[in-house]
Length: 114
Length: 112
Image 1 (tube, rainbow over the protein chains, first blue to last red):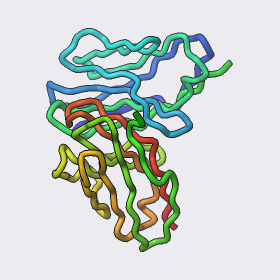
Image 2 (cartoon, chains in turn yellow, brown):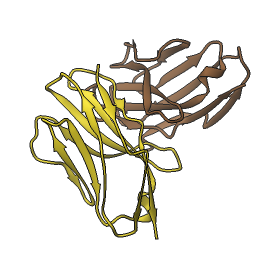
Image 3 (spheres, chains in turn purple, yellow):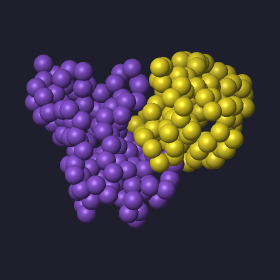
């Protein structure tokens, strides 16, 4: 069974600064996908970024980028130039290549302050 | 293009009552899912439908039933609600089971 661990329950960053959220996972699969989802106070789950395990290049989406270390089973999210609208819960999620379900971590609550 | 929609947004039930949560998507996706989110936890899969006409159990299926009504709609039914089913329920859809899942806004359910 796969597990996803987010060891930072809460984090805070000042506007315009950079913050990195950590995620580690455990799996015996070789083909899988990793995701970061954002959940703002509205509770909507919003896809932030997706990484295929077979790709060595780290995924980026505008101010969001990941540091994917396959051997270490680590998948951190870096948010650059943080904005007040980035305030949310961030969930790391794992999906095996042959599976249907997403396995989520427990989330990191990020507060962006002035 | 509304994406994934869920009704109702919020519901209060008494123990033993039944209800159906509705989900619809307009993205022509083949696969649909139901998750629940409890405080301090990530989402957990209840049931999913890989394609129209099929349904399968997820991680926490007990106390729930589902119906894939057609390609667009996937409902979740609680036959006899229990306080342990108090949660936020999310529906999601994807092109196929190996593709990115997109979520609805959630239904908050309180069982007294």
